[in-house]
Image 1 (cartoon, one colour):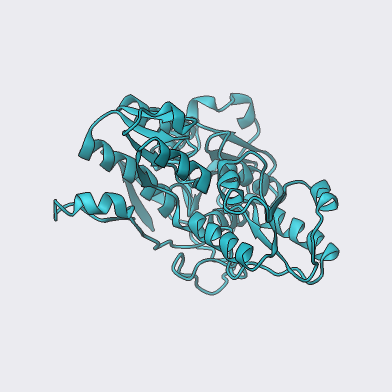
Image 2 (image 1 turned 90 degrees about the vertical axis):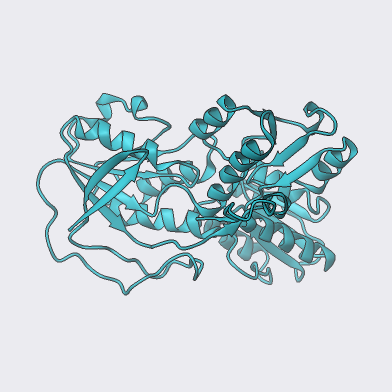
Length: 369
């Protein structure tokens, strides 16, 4: 069975795997995937060099929404368009938008007063919003709705005077925005040693929340450590790790054990992409590397390799994956098997501030993915 994939005028003929492996037991958004029953491969893997291509991979609905927001703003208002921080953590996407007139800034003070400013997919704290208001900036909020959900959870538990233990990576923009919702109530738990430093006022009023782009396994390791310390600690009302992060990790786990090498397309500042490398190694891949472009592949990585797994982080356009497939096929890895573990069907509406202006043109699409 074959599938045709297309990107910017190029078509790809992919050999769909003789077995489509669907994994159970992973909690994902019910809207995110159509999961069948667990199936086990009954045929042996083909001999020779082959590529296992993970599905799902690449853009999630939140990234689609954020990038589309900036592109629509460019079309509607023209350059320059100011964006606080990188709209998403991908070098290719950021450079492409920069060439089209997007100005990425670290702080609202860099934006001329009265200008339009887009908040990135990772979210911002109330202090950032207040700073934008003081500078009379018109803002469009491209925060991923799943990040916004965690912000609302922080506000809810802060109102109820809980101590909130936020599992996440120090310095990450999402963590800064989430912590900023209730800085007096939130304590960051990044590494194992942070668990020992945590102190709460009332062990019966503690809840853990998490950054949306973490490794599921890493997060649960921290949760178990915290649970040992605070047995009454509550869990978030729904999964904080986003469906796309979970789904991409499941897909990598499904193929990693068969792979001599797993190539993860993604940028170094992409938390979910870096986690995919870790997940691949933990799940049995002999080696794994994070790359932005096919040109970054070291030929030495391919020595003695028969099976190469390929996937990409949630902020990576598929054109970059196709370039990796090109690179490998030119070097003898001809067969491509797509390993499917979920079919994502999530869509998010564009930010309401932008939809209001686009309503002037009823032919303009109002949602993405």
